[in-house]
Length: 392
Image (cartoon, rainbow, N blue to C red; front, side):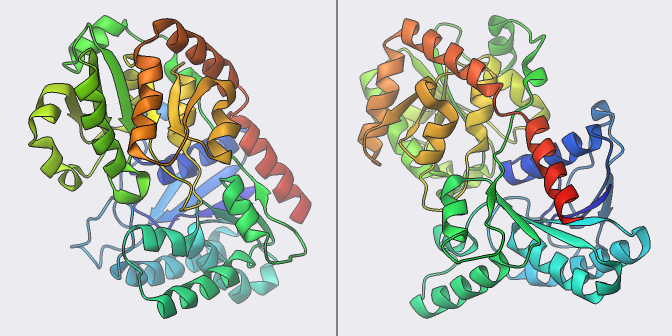
């Protein structure tokens, strides 16, 4: 099949949304499908090492000053999305895809408009939601007024029903979408991991030398965006608590944008116990995780997003410390250590459980590495393929 992916974002950037878009596309390509991605004018091109023929088509650089790569709302995206609508319409008219696969709410709306304009082509639309539009805007402090929030909730509910089929990355979001009765309920399409990334890694000692990490410490790693709705603030407070109690730890914070956490990094405890790797290229992620002892995810469930980083931790064979949510339990199972409450004290206590026990770290890590095999991008692509075939 010919699949036109609508990615209303600066694809590719080194963060979770883009990893889902990329890995789904790569896995579909491996199953023999042609994939074209329509996206913004900025972002990385795919490295040749992927041996991929995915065709990335970008809008024109009319907003040449727009260079924002991190997640979060921006009024200028309205202009970018109008340009992306024009690009998607052109590609759908000339390339003639069988399916438009719209990511995020903006991508789904763009795909729906193009589908209706080219109704005589009978193109099908699959909606792929990574979280709640409204709750993400609230979490970024971009939306506060109750009246405006209700307006955007109405818009979100409308977009939720536009696809011929709908998938979402988290159980929480599937439940939210399906609160509105629909002919075809939304289905879960979990994030995945590519276990081959973690094969043939250099020794832990050489990797720690490469990244200037102490050899004799318990290394606790967070990877991902350094923005509020990923739980970064609570993690920074947890680091202070943990380092006061344990001197044998070292934290790695890998991601961007660093300016969000600069105030903390000036404190003595962060200068002594924390290494920041920024930006963290996705294709270097396996090296960072392979030198680590524990993976931590401080994200709560309020944005209805899944946590793809947990699967990467699991693929690397790391025990995971996180909050006790349905999505986290579904991923890590017995390989996770869960904070009893959604507080910094509880998360710090959960970390302490692993810091003090190498045996427990090893046991939980082995459980996670085995469980990671259940969450492959190949199985996600197989499910998508069946959805495409069903609607066609």
